[in-house]
Image 1 (spheres, rainbow, N blue to C red):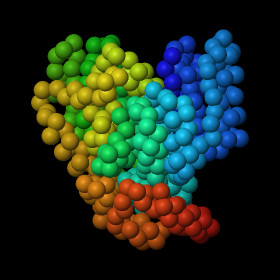
Image 2: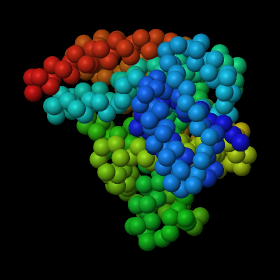
Image 3: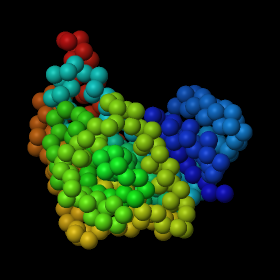
Image 4: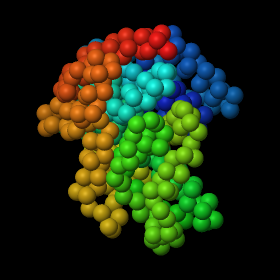
Length: 373
């Protein structure tokens, strides 16, 4: 039986756990989190729910502090997982929604990449620990993988694949297309190259429309020209409820990628950042890893360029060869002026400490914003 290590029992991680234990094919799970008391209760809840369905998967819990790389490496080595799923972040992306409307809208316009240290800090430490462990599992990184995976790739720590983002959009497109054309979803195949930016653009304040590529096939016939694709993208993303209910889809995306990476038979799918590339792509995914599956009409270079341009609109001007992240001017200026975070760049190895600085400044700002409102 395959063994999977699930790191981080936040919203997405808990969904993954609950879904997996109710699957008769569930692999052996090693669940890791810093908060032992809360996490063990969540594991108990999942196992009790599975038992209702007469399912009894093997699940163990390990307390892990990702800031301690050597100790984390020892735990990875001890369990020797076939695959690791990282769901650990230092500050969730949607925390700024708690601000008063005016402050939220202004800070949201810095875009999500402005908060990259909070998404990257623990991912970097986990990937360092995995490398130290001597184990070579496949790795799925759920933490803003359109942006974190490319940074990790620059320093030789690229996860195998990400989740969600482009795959939040792609199945919604097929649902929408099936309804418009009154055809079964099974005969619809899309090829979508798109960055995380397109997922947040219709849903959060202050984002702008970025470039993308979309090809729509129905019964192997190209029907792309039948649609205003900008409108189709917007409408399809708007099929989701507001808020974070979409995280169940993110969990499903993770589980699908997990099973694919444990199988010798490739599947066609969409996911972000295969092997550290920026943004999302159509791919073939198996235990051999991820391979781009682009259609006629777009080259690999063109697809990467689309996602690099979108990254600039998502707060990141560029990622240098040594893993230094350079913020876009607008993102830097908004964070500086609003919360006093005045860094134009940071190195990958600094991300954990920079995230702590950023979170501290944000908490001070948020407390004042709430009081003044």
